[in-house]
Every structure is written in C-alpha cells, then in structure tokens.
Length: 143
Picture 1 (tube, one colour):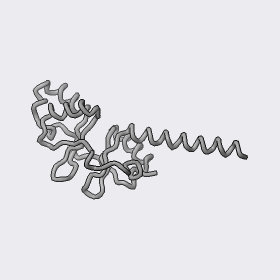
Picture 2 (picture 1 turned 90 degrees about the horizontal axis):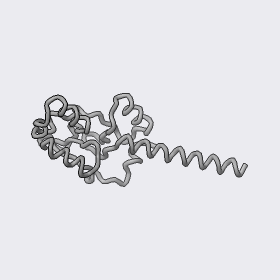
Picture 3 (picture 1 turned 120 degrees about the vertical axis):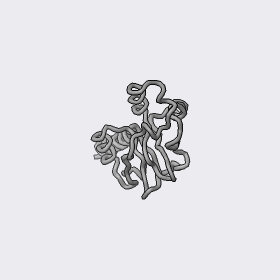
C-alpha cells in the first residue's frame, strides 16, 4: 500500500491550510479549533512550509507572547519535507522517524494533494497488520 491509497477519497480542497502572511495568533486558533497539530503553509498554490505546535512552542520560548502577532512565515518550518503519492507507508513512516516530524504534505509535482500525519500512517499500518493476522488465523483454521 502506498500513500496515494491512504489519501484516496480525501479532497485536497478539504485540507486546512493558511498563507505565509497569516498571523501566528490566527494560525494557533485554527490549530485549536480543528484539533490538529500542523498546517501546510501555501503560497501561489504551492506548499512552502509547515506550521506546527512545535513552531509555536519554540517561538514562545525564544521571543515571548509578542511573537503571536507576527506572520507564520517567520516561524514555519521551511522548506517542507514532502512525499509523492507512490511513496509506501513504510517509507513515509521511516522518513518521519528519521526527520523527527509528524506531518507530511503529499505532492503531485508542485500541487499538494494530501496532508498526512504519523497517526494516519500508524492507524493504517495497524489495520493492515490486523487484517493479515485475521487472514492467517482463517488459513490455519481451514488447513
């Protein structure tokens, strides 16, 4: 299974995002309202960065609450690490583990077609493992 299979059925238009000029305070509010951990930052139809809870914490620790009035473009992680639709789930999990990140934009060329979290990948992988285990139990029972 690859990441393209995982995002099948999800509309790219449903991805919650913001622009580099969005005030950090507004982006934080969006994270809280949507109960999500990160936002892709868009500019000219391309993903140019990721704004995450970690970015908020690091900025607050370094600059204090005043940083909340600045744009996310000043604190986002850029350039974003991205993956293609044909990336396997295990490759995506490995990349996230190695780079210590929890969110990945899925791109087709320069166009973002999905935004996945490590939770999405772990959930899907656990479902696969359970399905394989069930198939093995059925095979053993019929053998």
